[in-house]
Image (cartoon, rainbow, N blue to C red; front, top):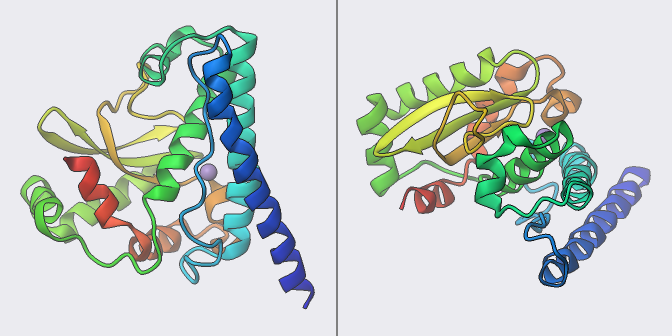
Amino acid sequence: METINRREFVKQTVTAAAVLAVPASVLAHETPYALQFKQVALPYATNALEPNIDALTMEIHYGKHHTAYIKNVNDAIAAENITYSEKDFFANISKLSAKARNNGGGAWNHNFFWQSMKPAGGAPSGKIAEALTGAFGSMDKFKEQFTQAAMTRFGSGWAWLVKDGNTLKIGSTPNQDNPMMDVSELKGTPLLALDVWEHAYYLKYQNKRNEYVANWWNVVNWDEVAKRLN
Ligand code: MN
């Protein structure tokens, strides 16, 4: 009973946070700051990705970690009077503070990550399946290479599938960096991302990042990845 009540409470808090995030985008038109990050509404319930990703991890990850990145990047934008568009913000990130870089990446990457997942993700089909098979040899080889990128990222960071020109590439970034940043070794338009920070899996998987990555494939939203390819 206690668990249900606590989860219900957190769920309501998360919903409230998502609602509160909306006026920021509206206010963006009324402030001198061209850029305001807002937290997307979670496109499924916090327990919808069970058993692959547990509800408590989702509640804390979305409701605490991500919410903080959003607040902190918007604070940095205001404090530093940053007037870039979102695209230019990342393309010029080397000129901005560590606060803007870390929290801007954290804000954007997590919005992208939530939308990259859905309950019962299934397998890719059509154009995206063909593109992955063409680029990496087979779906198994693609998954192997992506898993390798996720497993070899030392410490905190992200694994990515990106489109760079007409080429599909796999790589990883440290901390909250992403492939749109000028500082990133891996460059391209993100198609798929996996958060490999310990906060993304430690409650359920502890040190077993490999099990988290293996189970995460069950909740990849391939329809969304396919849309990004277009
Ligand atoms: Mn995270």
